[in-house]
Length: 186
Image (cartoon, rainbow, N blue to C red; front, side, top):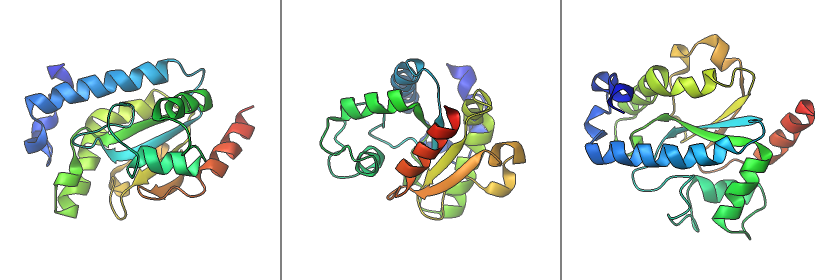
């Protein structure tokens, strides 16, 4: 486990990486893996800015009834009337996976320049591997407005696979984009 975090000491968000945080990350990544492992094929990757402090998309225990990414995605995919666990199962069937640029809760950093530097650093040093492992899978970013990674520092081979950008609070049009990706894949 510690090898994964060996580069973290140079990250601008290093102060957020506690022992408790590492345990949460391992647990949440295990939860994500349980869903993604069951996908026949990953058709689309959603790339978020960072794993929040106290809840995680793939953990059905936290409340997402009034906000957060799972809520806004349920709204976009017309699934507000089903449970979170059924929604996550629908994401498995669709082949839509969510990864994050950063492991630490970057919303706790008030300086946006530092926040973007941390998202970029963690993405390039640790989490880019998720995209490298799926070389033919397109992705969309789902970042808070004016945040996320620094595009000038991301390799063109990765950026060339980005097919759209969405706001963390509004993914209007993502459902239609997914249908287009799905039709091209069949």
